[in-house]
Length: 189
Image (tube, rainbow, N blue to C red; front, side, top):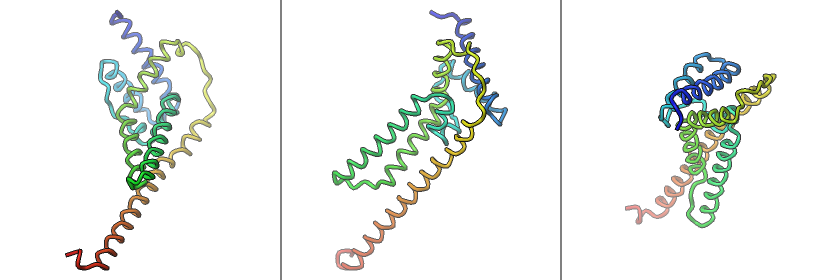
């Protein structure tokens, strides 16, 4: 059984690692207070907390926070989910691809927003257990931030494309039903 001091020391190491990362990379110094509060609450047993960057950027946020395996799992789950919807579409369930895409995107965004801090805490805990906080790593020259900014439009464009596909499909269905009604007035009454 671990003592209070062991848990407190572990939390202090996790916080120092998290705050060191945000201090080097963040434009907003309020993120220090945010992560200090969020990670402290998670260490006390709270699992759910909201993280806007994780919500909007999803797998890119996980990559930025060096949670590569989770980013890969999120992308794999998305591809499998969209692929399964394609198979179901072939099997004559006639699901709209735009709705499936939007549903997948919204589910992944909500899961990332709700559980992002918890995954970050677990990742930092693992790094502290393995002693990564003892290693001095030179700071990068900013290419990661540059490519991260380039990755921003991907989720936004995905959402807009999915929304446009859904609206287009809805309009086609409405036009089809309108044409059926206009060509066969006896059945519409």
